Image 1 (cartoon, rainbow, N blue to C red):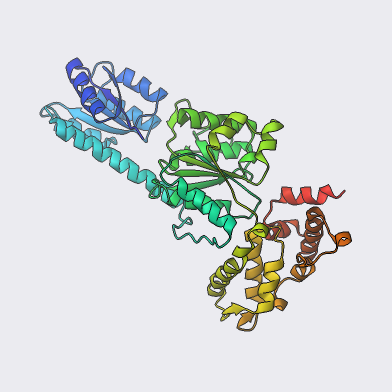
Image 2 (image 1 turned 135 degrees about the vertical axis):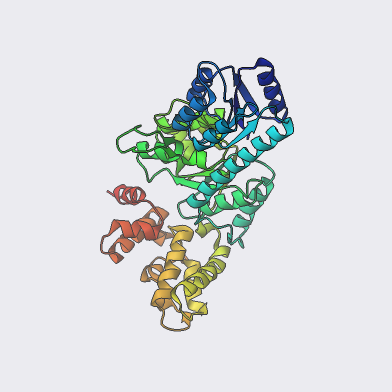
Length: 445
C-alpha cells in the first residue's frame, strides 16, 4: 500500500525539498503553493496526510484545516508554523490537526511525525475492521481425511506465498467460506482483516453501500457517511460469497476496483484506494453464467487466477466420521450434555447418507441428535428418519436405481413435511437459499 500525501507550502524551495524527501520514502506526493489549490485537490482525490503551512496566500493553513476536516475527516493534517507562532499551533490542534512542526524543522523529525500519523491511521482502520469481523476467529478447524479434501488443502498450501485472487466453486454447504478463511490466515495478510459479504442477501443498492460505502445524502436513508467493506478491509482479504448473484452493474464496478485498485463510494466524487485481496465463491456453474451473459467474462478472469473446487460430502466419505465427531464435541459443549460417542449403527447410517446439503446439513443433523439424545451416546433413533429413508444402498438392482434429481426431490419434500411446510426452516437445514429451494420444487412441475 502506498500512502498519499499532499503538501501545501507557498515557499517553492521548501515545497520541492519536502516532496523529494517524502518520495524517497516511497510515499505518493503531490504539492500546491496555496490553500485554495490544496482544497481543490482534496475535493477530487483521497489523501492520507496533508502537510500545510499556516501562512499561505489565498487561504491560510487554519482555514484550510477547518474546511478539510469537513469534507475529508479521514485526512490527517500536520501544520507547519513559523518561529514563535505557538499560538497558531495550539489553535490548529483545537481545530483537529494531528500534530504541528515549528520552523525551522529537522527533516528526520518531519519524517518521524509523518510515520507516526500513518501508523495511527493504520491502527484505527484495523480496529474498525476488527469490530466488523469479531466472529471470525483464527482458530479454524479443517477436517481433511479424504483424498478429495487433502488435494484441496495441497492447492491452498501451494498458494501460501502468492497474493493472487481465488475463485472457490462447489455445491452449497461444502465449506467454501471456511476454506476462504484458511487461505487468508495462511497468507502474508494473516494479521490483517478478513471480511465477508454475501452477494445474495442484499438488494443492488444496499450491496453497493456495504461494499463501497456511501456519502451522506447519497440515497434515501443515507443520513451519515459510511465506510464500505472494501475500505475497511484495508490490506486484508475481502470474501464475496455467492458472487454470481451480483448484478451486472455492480460487477462492472467491482471489475474497475480490481483493475485500477480504487473505487468510488456511492454518491462520492473522489476515488478511494482498494488494497484488499479478493476471494470469491459460488455454488453455481459460473462458466455457464459467463456463457449466457449473466456474469462478466472479464471479471471472471480477474477473480479466477486460481480456481479451487471443493467436492461435495458424498464424494469424500472419509470425512463424514471425523466431521461427525467434531460436531458432536462442539454441540455437546454448547448444550451441556454428557454424550461421548456414536454407536456403530448411528455412525453407519451417517456414513451411507447422501447429504444434499453437504457439511452444513451434517452439522444440523448432529446438533439435532445431541438435543434429542437422553443417553450417553448417539443412537440411530436420535437421527432424522429421513436419513434411514434415503440412504445410498450398498447393493442396487438396475430397475430400481433412482436419479440424483429424484432422490433430491423426495428428500426436499420429506424435509418440508418435517417442518410443516416452512420453507425458511427447510432451506436452512438443507443448506440452500430459498431461491434454490424454490427452483428444486419448480423443476418437478
